[in-house]
Each structure stands twice: as C-alpha cells, then as structure tokens.
Image 1: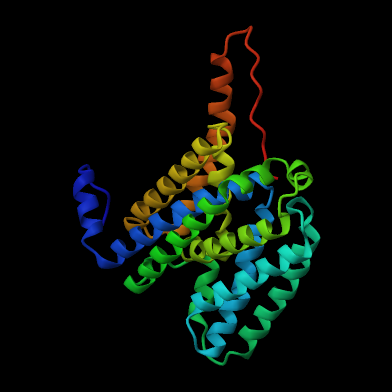
Image 2 (image 1 turned 180 degrees about the vertical axis):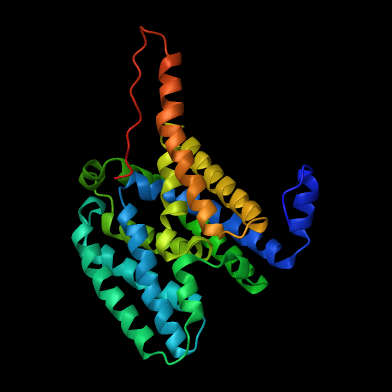
Length: 294
C-alpha cells in the first residue's frame, strides 16, 4: 500500500480497519491528556519526573507479567507508587532530582529481577518499552476514556493552585498553600497520564508526548490557557500524522511521533521565534519566551 493523491480515500481506507480505529481513538485521548499534563510538567521543570514514571512503571509491568495480570495494571500501580514515593521524599518540585534518581534506580533493578524470573517470552513487557498502539484493543480504548476523564477532572480541580505553585513555589509556600498535598495530587495525575502515554510511544520515548509539545507551546503562547491548547494540538497532530504515515510505511508509529514532535520543536524555537522577532518594530521591546523545559 502507498499514499495516493486522494487524501480522503486514504483516510477512509485507514478507518476501515478496526485496529486503526482503536489506535486513532486511543492515540487521540492520550495526546489530549499528554498535552494538558505535559504543559505543567515543563512549567514545573519536572521533565525528568515524567521519564522516571515511565521507567518505574516498567518495573510494575514486569511484575504484572510475572504474576499473570495485565501489564497496564502493573504499569499504573508502579507509576503511582513511584509518584507517591517521589512526592513524599521531596516536597518541592525543583528539588526532587536526587529523590527521583534513588527511586528510579531501585525500580529498574526490580524490573530486571522480575524479567529474569519470568520463564516465558515477555512480549507484552518488552512492547511497553517502545509502545504498541496498533495493538490496542477496544477494551483498552474504554479504559483510556475513563482514565482521560478522570485526569482532566483532576487537573480542572487543582488547576488554579497548581498553576500558581508552578509559576512561583516560594510565593505559593509563603502564602500557606498545601504544597505536599498539591504535589502528591499532581504526581498521581502525571503517573496515570504517563501510564497511558506509554501505550502510544513506549517507556523509552515518552518524552515525545509528555514533554516536547509542552515545551514547544511555551514559544507559541504566553498565556497558560493558550499554551495548553497549543500543547494539545501539537500532540494531536504528531499522533495523527504518525499513525497515518506508519500505515503506509514499514516504520513504527513511535518513530514518526517522536520525529514530528522533535522537528516541530526545532522549527518553532529557531525559525518561528526568529521570524517573530524580525516582525517586531525596532522600537518595540520584546521579552523572549522563558525556556522552562529544564
């Protein structure tokens, strides 16, 4: 199969396959969640946290395969336990690198132990490393719908205090905001979001949806609401286009999603930003966007 000049015919052909319908639906929901939560991950300089959750979840998935239960259940359990551990060990988001490294190292060791104890071929566990969105079932799509609704409701509840604390932790703490409770709530939300994003990009490539769109959006919009919308749109375009290209080529979906997100980031940062500066009149003072991607 190859891409034809008739784009609508190609789209109809893709949609005629049940596995592609499931992939598009799960990918769309995951991109929305990743775009929303990823913006706060970047704003709070917690990109390493998102990456750590995915690898901590891998240990949980390995344990689940060893125990004979669905890997996603173990992924969710591992990510949430890791998130709670990181939040309890480090109260402030900007001072958690050491705690994350400690939890991450221990979790990776557990994951290797569980894989070595498994006597069969852990296909499901290894697929989590690189993603397997084309293998998502209808039941998993329903699980993603429920998780997406829960995550968006959770973000909506803590949106204002989370935004305040993300912009200035010192002022938020001085005003008596419950930083520990807020940190735990956000960690749980990110843990669940990462667990479902792993289905699309895999553990090793989770940055592509959880971090890159949010980092790119900061160069496109200064207002949080607009930046979040931009982050979601970037994640959606990368996911949809990645699925479309992978259907007509022998290359994996994760490759296209990560590549598109990366090159769009480069374009926005080095081409769009320069073009925008050239359009500003000589007498205008323009403050460049703050790169909070860490």
